[in-house]
Amino acid sequence: MEIDVNKLRQGLSDPERLAAFRKSRVIALGATEEQLARAAWKDSIERIHIPDEVAKAARKMFDGLVDRTLKTHGEGECLVVHAATGAGKTHILNRLLKRQDLASSEDAQGPIRPLLYVRAPSPCNLLTLGRVLYRKLTGVGLPRSYETHEVWEHLKYQLYGQRVSIIVIDEFHHVLMNAAIEKKRTVVSTVKSLVQPEPVTDADADPLVPYPLQVVLAGVDEVNRVIRFDGELSRRTPRLTIKRLHATEKGLKRMRRFIESVERALGFPGSSDLSTDDMVRRFMKATRGYRGRAMHLIKEAAFRAIDDATARIDRKLHLAAVFRDITGLGPNANPFLVADIDTCPEVKEQIWNRLTLLRGVGTADGAVGPVEPDIDVNGDDDIKGDREVLA
Image 1 (spheres, helix red, strand yellow):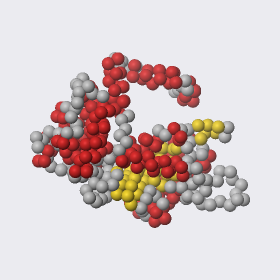
Image 2 (spheres, one colour):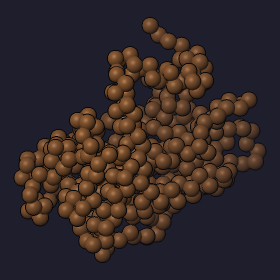
Image 3 (tube, one colour):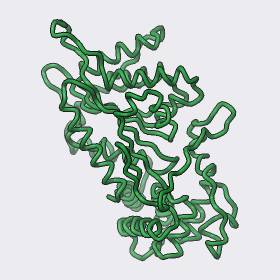
Image 4 (cartoon, helix red, strand yellow):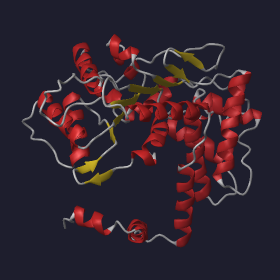
């Protein structure tokens, strides 16, 4: 049976009806009150946000991006958020998506969409991306006969007509993988045309004249490298680069502070002792120093502890099992199982990149794409370069 989506949306405009509608899904699954309580607890863990230096840098850059949308002339900005797999890019983007000042609305002229967010599918090219953006914006698809330039021409009119200010494209590397150099340059040129639209004369009779859009591109380090193909755009592109912490005194301190904050927000009655010196070193070894990965491990371990009805997260029972399931590594290479963490071999970056491969982000021969080497200045210092923040 096909439902009338527009009618349903109108009916759910009442908050009480909306809450009942959402709860009915899990009630239909025969969930008990205990199961619903556990699910609510897990949802609260999903919403944990730690305002560390990475989050603060992102907030400052997002604030600047939103302020820039007030301009009606000149050039916009292309913000690149790039990092290794699991470093926390999507979580950072979610903070931008939840801003109330970017909520959609409607007036006599139609819908107003300050922010348009899509996740690039895999596989993807410029044509596919244009179609995805168009459908997300309008709810309908374009004719299959349309070529790339026709799709983007129609898309731009919808962008300006619906008064979009910011476009966010997550997993942007999907558009770049396996593409020839010239195709990558075409992708960059298309992004540039949104940020730096062609000027129009005062005599232009079309009311839908182009204005500068702000574009956020998120993905692995390939995104940053490709933007550098256009020197003019690259010079106008701030970067938020999430770098790993190293096992120095400063790096260990930062990881400990992060884990302490996470554990306080978990809500277990007993202490899981996640931030002891030994445990911090285990997390550093398991995650290669990425706090986003540490958050993922803790979250999944917490879910298992909740299902087991235990008062705390157990290192071997929960964390070691999660790490094993993610990486496939045996007990001698599992940082949460070895007796002495110093004897545990280094977890290779390729192990974490398997998560990327599962999402379809690989090269034609199945290998992981090139990984930008870590920038290491004094081990783990934040580096502030020319319009670039490395956290």
